[in-house]
Image 1: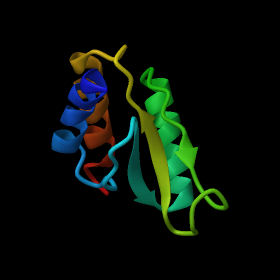
Image 2: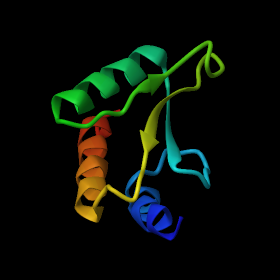
Image 3: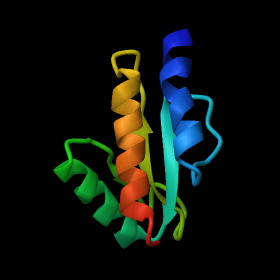
Length: 92
């Protein structure tokens, strides 16, 4: 659990549009379903598996990406993911 918290910590610093979550699943709220799908596809092209979660799993208008952090993820992996998300969402 300690390692998961340590690995998850950079996400709270680098990704500002996240819901508060104390678990290994870190939701990044996108809102628009198509935007969430597009962002998930762009991240996949960069080598990150971050699925889009949308209606009916979550309420309409609250689509999100589901980032799952494990102790197997190194801090540089998390930082790279955060940087990719920031770069892809800068103009939004």
